[in-house]
Length: 587
Image 1 (cartoon, rainbow, N blue to C red):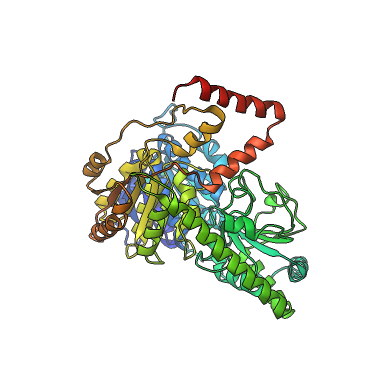
Image 2: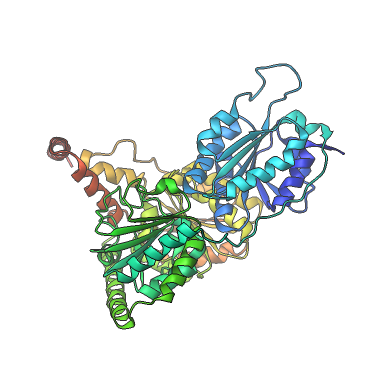
């Protein structure tokens, strides 16, 4: 039979269960857009910037059991989308990027948008393909999907020349896509033996702990069972904040070292066996590598490259987190630890965690924020007013760590934050993508003013599709995470102070409601009003005059860790420069 390449792309996307594509039409992909306009399965969503499209697709993948997809123009579109593709790559998120390509049937070169895209995206994708004939399209899409989703997930890229999209070509068949079985394969003998050893170590531990990242986000129920069985504290990475229910009495918080909140730092002090699942022990997860191990490490991850990269492991177990945890749980139950000792440990631990958490909240509540909004009071109010199944999205900035320390995640995959690529501009488009695929849930973004300026115009996409997202813009007039980091070593701020931004004007421009939260007395009423307005299918921008004068534990911890890591000469130089500027510069 003969089919155009665009028809074949539509067939493949429908078979793969893709619900939306995000991007901007151009001369190199309009035929595919035309095909998708007739699809009952796939809806193309036009955005305002391909970077925003990639963030939307990334967020769709993080919060659903189907993949997000891009449909972009080559060269410029791909370059702009690389921010989101890179985020997905480093965070382990499946994403399918589809790009048009220049014509291959004219004999001419130096065409519009002509460049080697596969070389450009190779470092930030799991696989990249360039279609050369029609019969490759459907099998390539199926292979790309498997590549994106099997093993450690990640983005893939497919380029389709415009002439192949436009003109019919011969294909043998239109194969259906057979989704792989959801049940994991049986564990290998060697893996099971290592799991048995891990169970023995954990049973015999005096003070075991559980540290989980995004890699364990699909197994929260098993994490709870393992933690309760051994009565051990649980901490998460930044990306894995929602991998364990924050309301559980064994949940201690984000991180386990000197950059962690007090509940987590205290709960993991003198930990002798640490079970770490789905975390790479990267820079943010470890507070700039400030963790000093006191433990034997049992490291579980689907990617063996992470083992012993930063912290040596006593046992390394490669495989799917859910499968490994099921095997471990079965082994732990087969030979349980004596109840009396475990229950006594658990009772003391739960009391300590509850005390430390409340003390930290009280510390924030007592902080004098003057006429501005106290972050502790804001997040306590927001948590009390949002249903447990709401989605909260952050961006990259000081607000990210305020969320991590002060907002309690209650359901898996419902608190979304960019982590390792750490790209500003993620939040607003991500809220749009999540609301598009979860229209019956409340979707809230917490975003710094600097990050909002990058992609805030994507709220126009929300307005177009009647998506009532709420974006709380933490407005302090600075790039605060960096300006705070400048204060100690430099005693001045360079390029981190923003000009005045009139967010009401942006709201008017994109058709959003605008609300202003000027101080603590506004918090409850403004949150209620934002929820009421967003329920009408209109986005809401809340201009929060936030107080950033109190540093998070994370910020304090990494500043101290990095300063102490310097040799004595450079340490004295940095401190001396800051001290001299403090004396020499009038306040």
